[in-house]
Image (cartoon, rainbow, N blue to C red; front, side, top):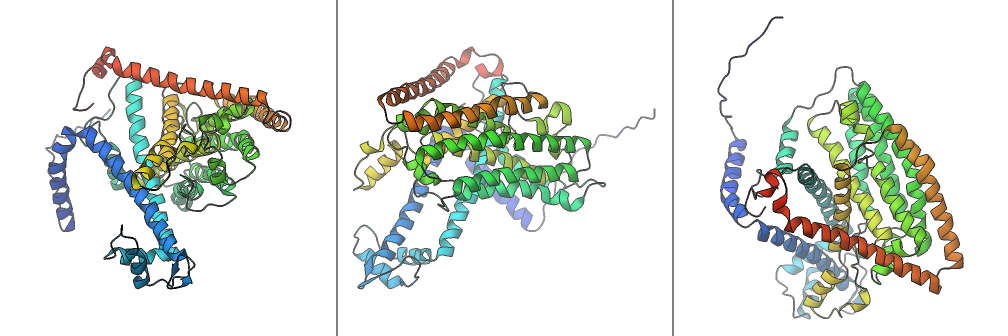
Length: 507
């Protein structure tokens, strides 16, 4: 066999020209200034970022509330409609002058455009798109850290300085800069459009996902049906990706995805009827508001059948999101990379963004329909009277806010990551067997049992006792998890290898 040898050459630095030179220089300056600060004070910076983000979200709600109050108030003797767009800057300034808390200088000019529905929608869409992009970036980094810890290693530790927090951003820049390859024998049109057919439905699901009583872009009565439909449409993009790639591994992965998602959507949507029956409405905001009386009033603890429905839904959601042990569509040990084997660069990243966004969506459905939505375990009846700024903020921290919704969703995303790096992958025949022979019968029993319970035992003393017992079981599970986490943190130095050493400040 003829051997070829390539002489080693020293890499020459890349020469940037034009606007790229200025961007690179600016990036170097920012890095040189920020790196020492981030590595020295990682904890306070992280907490400060969370606090600032929370304040910005709260300020967004306050500003929109002020505009609505002004528009609906009696200004110059006439009651206005919010969308009349007849308020002038002078009228807004006159209203603010009567409220000594606000100054009227620049604020009245900033508030005036918010009367326009299109402007409000664009602001809301910007917030949704920002959340949609931020969650996958954080979840990907978190998965790599959790996987590292489970495998007795540190995971990303260098990029960004503190626990490799900027690794996902660096990977994103790398993927965007990679060549976009299309196989010669592939269907080029379908190959290019498939990632977007998987990406866009995940984004659209965020439009009707409520983060709070007033934190929803479109509060419609059929929001649950719309979100379930968007989750189901994602499979179309996967099937097209596998078919258009003209690759055996890709088409096998796509067919597995089709069988798996179509199968598990049946038990998943069946158990979703149970919280609808409990609340008597399809409106997700109303379902969330009905669970504000403390953790014992959450739908999951209403009766044994709602408890079973919650567990069934969460298992089915793992299969719906292609998460282990149901990650057959992209099983690396069998199908190389499954349906996205032939993809590279930006289009490959779109599939992963769609997957992690879908993880948040299914977790959001579980939180909203079963686990108290945006409410804390404390009953809202204990909340302070909102007559001051401090009390409003305390109510958001202690009783109800979008922060708690996102926090609960992140816990479920962590559980999905934990399961992936703990349980082995099951065979495709076992996946389908567990759906048809186990999950679907359990879902049907839970649905019928809940209907009988509501007719015969709902509101009785027995029902309240069982509800209290289930609530205590749920609290016990949470306490057990926290105990294990605290024990692991305290005894972290006993772990093997590099985990027993603090590699970087704050780690």
